[in-house]
Length: 298
Length: 276
Image 1: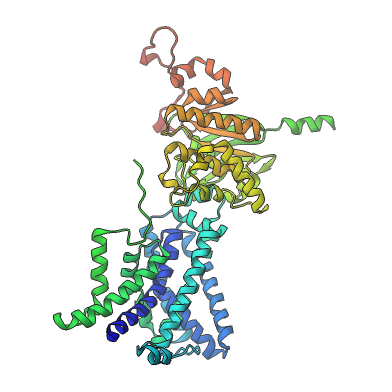
Image 2 (image 1 turned 180 degrees about the vertical axis):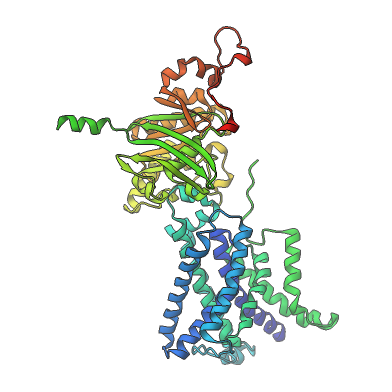
């Protein structure tokens, strides 16, 4: 029984890590209807910049984090100015293609600026097993994973309040619903896009920090974006809580399936389980668990 | 001195001077449209599909640019100042707001949130905004009952009220109202126009409205412009237009005496479309 709980918990924590990446997708999709293929690379780029600022310029951690946030905001501005603005009013598929291009540009830029070798990211986030959990419940959990879960919880709370209660948040949702109408009531799309890409950049930084601390900052980090895809399909592309819960379901499902189903059918379930689950959802509930209902008036 | 003052007073609130609009650098939609809207007036732009009514409104509110349209000739003045280079957001701040054709509510936002987005550009504090919200509810009591409903699930009439109320929340001097009657039952159309009239009289809002329903538009407007194929072909006070035989014939569907043979119908289009 303890073993089962351990599996579920470690699945939950791994799921939170997926959720962090998925969250960035949701933000941009919600506000601009763009599926941002570059979200994973943005996480990589943010982590690279953070490590680079600390190693090459010898910045203390807090300064490096502020510096990286500034870089992500500058990046958001540049994306708006040079990518989104010229493509205004184009089909979503064209914007999607543009984000694929963006992914390559960012990957190349990260390489040129900070080099391509694997880097350690040590922000003083506690590592190793949580002694307290081990002592009192006899359960093995990484401290880092608990830390990631707590960070995700804080971030989601903040984002939910931001989206639901503030003037800018309302404007973001308005833009997500109807660009033209938003424009007509005086919401400047350019400002909104810079804000939303900045927020997504900061979310990417958090994801980059967590993944970087776990497995080192390396270019394969950009591939975690692929794991975020089934999370999005499960949770719904437009729902912030959906991204979190979707991530957890995928995380737990993967681990439980691997350990209990794996031996029966020969293992390696972890690699495809998420995609099968996503496929099932596409068949029966395409808007995901928490996605906005597609409203169709007749 | 007194003469100068008088000159300022008679100057129209909005004047559109001979504008030409081209979409995508090739499609010429407006071929020199001029019109004037006096302060606190209701002016109707009339005409068939594709005549250029919507484009004219969008040229004023500058929503054109987001659709790859450009004003290539002419000028637009609001309260004596050129506005053709302003962004839609700046125009809303100056008091010019458009209510788009087809209502365009934010479907996933609640009715109240929809109204509040109209106040996005305002900086005068939440107290004043709350007050205006109550004002909008007093004009459209049905919206108050449904304030927590998602706008996507409200009826067509309610959505038109949301769109109009949302525009009101920006404290506009002038509302550009595009096709308010579209897809609504006659009774609702009447209700919307009654509200337009009340807003005009009680709140002093000036209206420039585009409408295919010539009959109702000329009942509520003071002045009308008839557009055909990107040009103004006729204009006058609403009363004059109502009595004009051509308007009766082509737009109101009333003909005097015998049915006129279709071959004898006088066309406003002097040249064939493909030559222009």
